[in-house]
Amino acid sequence: MAWWGKALGGAFGFMIGGPLGALMGIAFGHSFDRGMRDVGGAEFAADQERIQAAFFTATFSVMGYIAKADGRVTRDEILLAEAVMDRLGLGAEMRESAKKLFGEGKASDFPIDEVMEQFRREIHRRTTLIQMFLEIQLQAAYADGVMHPAEKEALVGICGHLGVPVALLDRLEEMLRAGFGRSGYDVASSKTSVADAYHILGIDESVSDAELKKTYRRLMSQHHPDKLVAKGLPEEMIQDATEKTQQIKAAYELIRESRRQ
Image 1: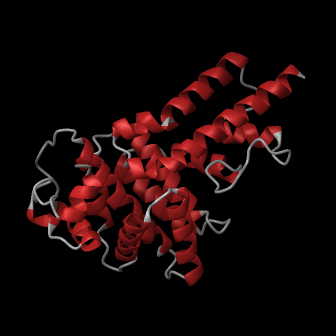
Image 2: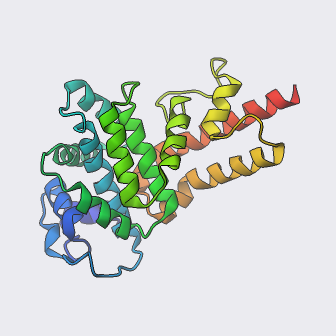
Image 3: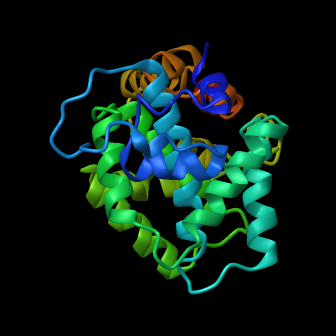
């Protein structure tokens, strides 16, 4: 049985505890935090289902935390968060659980430090999952077209917890502003400039053809849906990764065509 079925059936109590387990309990209506409580001192085996559950739980609770970073969450921000959930391809039941997690993240006593610390341990520093997590948080923060300074500050703090340089966040933000990961954005359309295509790949226009190809292959590997699922991305969330690989490929082909000319 996949993690999602176990979560619905309340069978995750023995697999995950700590703040993520408590959040799962709220989202799915079970007492998951009765299981492994001492997440600080234990080394966990890389369990696929456990990592998927941790990723899902952290993603949507932290999304609520970031939305609240500027002091309040408007109705428009809630609708925009739901639009991100739609983009991720969540079914009706997963969407309801995601909304509950989003609500928990908005709470004034949301334990962001503890949640991020456990999340970092649960995913065992898988860089591809960390990057996907940050991309989704940026998509939510930019859902209305702008990012509040307090939201950026919250994201910088999250990078600190995850042990990733702020430079990575800045590069991902630049890619997103160019259209990467934006719902309904078609890189292949005539409205996309070559300059935007370079930004989508996160590279400078002066790079060599060899470096261009290397970057393209790296991004395709990082966002390949099957590889992400193998690393621990919930299968129910691969729609976003699939669309991103299509955008990466379209940006690369646009740049190659411009260089031929």
